[in-house]
Length: 306
Image (cartoon, rainbow, N blue to C red; front, side):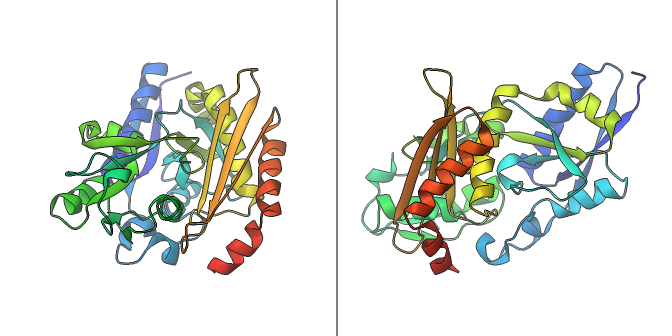
């Protein structure tokens, strides 16, 4: 193809900019002569920091402004953390590429304690995630769990000034920003479940833009897409949005089939519903695990939290 320019819409946070530049460089490497530019934008999720994500949430909290830029022709594509992408995209958009997934675990970060179990009684732990909150309450009901907003650097600064005894962040984000040394221990699946799609980078385009899709699809990792599609199918089966306390992790079983783990939590008392299943069809697998969770009372739990 002839050389041209692609414009990437991205959030302005350091992690979002890292991810967008990573995609940009991968595209330049794959298409010599291609010019790739970033269009940094602010989203509602970035701007409203005085309330929890659950309060201001809803589908597309970190996406809408980027999608508007694509729809208006100011950008050709957008780069997202896949965990922030709703289970169902708005009509006219598609995920043209999902890059190879990094480490999907959560990270326990503390200046004074080596692990979650090492925290003293009543210690204050920071997180903005209902999923993490539910799993924290299940494991350590004595802890004080406090809301923690802001970018990765801001969250670490709040820990360093003593606002929290520990914070829970994503391993992948810390790795990408050069903060891997801050990780004291990993909270890893299947015992501790991440968000659906966590640690995968997604590239969103207009569904009708064949030129851009053709350029972008070279970045797609088939194994990652297969696994995260099962996790997102579970999210969709539960009617999920980005604020649901839902964890999901799909891995390849010894026989080559998919093994999907699902978790739905209660942030008030730490009650966790868990289910898992094996299969080949990602949609059917998501519905199977979702059905198991519903059989255990998921609908009542979700109604109770509203």
